[in-house]
Image (tube, rainbow, N blue to C red; front, side, top):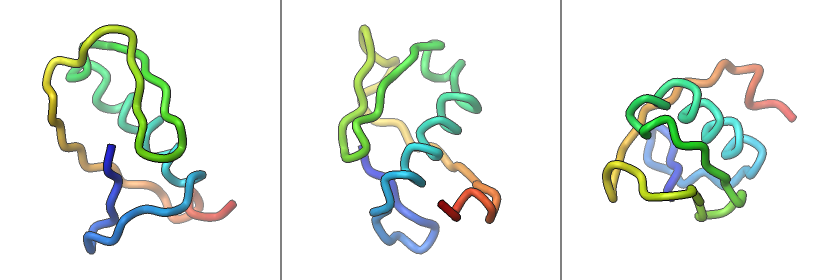
Length: 69
């Protein structure tokens, strides 16, 4: 799992990473075969069963208030 900002900088804040992963599941659930997954806060994303593709790219927009802790 690789999370990067729109200017290609890696995402290092685990709290924001979790919000991004939650948003991906919410918005793109049908493309993920409606599979639930668990994010470890680092680079691991775990599912029960395989996802439809090995590599998938998603665009997620968070409101500015989501960047604050």
